[in-house]
Amino acid sequence: MSRSGREPAPKQRGSRAPSLTLKAGRERSLKLRHPWIFSGAIDRVDGDPPSGSTISVLAADGTPLARAAYSPSSQIRARVWSFESDVLIDALFIAAAVVRAAASRETLFDADHTAARIAHGESDGLPGVVADRYGDVVVVALLSAGAELWRSTIVDAFAALPGVRCVYERSDAEVRTLEGLPSRAGVAWGALPPSMTMREDGLEYVVDPVAGQKTGFYLDQRDNRRLVRTLARGRRVLNAFCYTGGFTLAALAGGATGVVSIDSSGEALAQGRANLALNPALAANHNQWIEADAFADLRRLRNEGATFDLIVLDPPKFAPTAAHAERASRAYKDVNLLALKLLAPGGQLATFSCSGGVSSDLFQKIVAGAALDANATVQIQRRLGPSPDHPVALNFPEGDYLKGLLLRKS
Ligand code: SAH
Image (cartoon, rainbow, N blue to C red; front, side, top):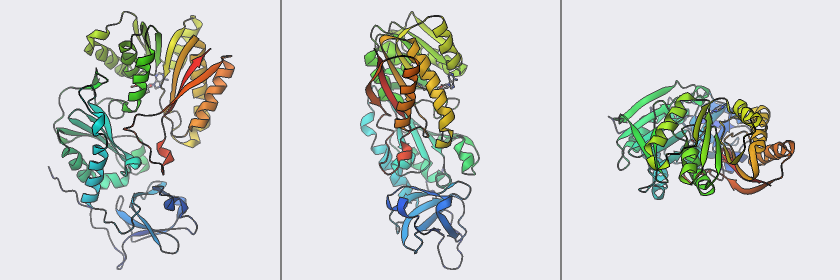
């Protein structure tokens, strides 16, 4: 398979390279090194650049500000590769960024930890490129026109990392349609082993990059699963939105007396059971997997008078953007209200939101509203975020999607 990605030569009008000129006064966010250029900020595009190709970004007075990937169908019309306006964006530039991102995760791998996110999009200087490494397999998602154009370079760069045997592509997220890109999934390089497992904190998990959600596992919660493990001794635990049981296994490893795990996906639960079977030391007597809508099932548990000492709430993204924030707020409030009612006095709730459209401040307000309605006195013991392999670039607050609170009910 080719190891040399090439950018198609951009069509040029006259002698000018393709460029995008901002409206007067719209260069501020570029100067703050924010990597997105929205369609509304653009005065004109010259040179008829093809989708994904590199353009120069110019201020209204013609001052060069950045080199960016052009995305004609997206509201995010361009994503910056570099704020050095004279840098050449070529295969070497892209491959070097991949290698840098992967190298910054090296210390996260050891005998007990065989998986981590090795590229996290804009925050790693790789707009639209997400990659998770599970042992010798890299699962990559290309989510922007620029990432798509450099596909073979990016795949080859991951393939060239030491020990990698397969690069599997999961470019099938919905955001691809906003970029005018078709959905694509399959082996991009090498051969996918028939089954895959990974280790996190010494626990074994099956990973299914083909049929699993996202790239197969929610690696962003690694540190929070460890936290739950330290809190679980002697506790009756409820894990709502459990997916394949990451928090369930962590709680059992920490000495929970029993865990009730709820998810609406039967496949995820089947894999949760398989994960438990992979770790015979965890065989728990009081372990229950429930396929249900978590909202309905939390209500049922409440009606039956159940209580728990430790609850994990890790729902899916209710608000992908700020426009969905209001409806999402109601959903977060409902589910947190139900959880707080199910929590025994002195119990703890680890509650999360992975909605980019809900800020930490808003999330705290929603949870405070839920506590008020539940008539519960609640303290924040800790603010939670993603593991360090999901960094947030300081100039890219949109990257700050996962927020959480560890709460204690009096
Ligand atoms: N905590 C998990 C990740 C959770 S992802 C981990 O550590 O791996 C969110 C999960 O919510 C997904 O598994 C999805 O299937 C599930 N889900 C989505 N809507 C749901 C609903 N209404 N009720 C129950 N589960 C739901």
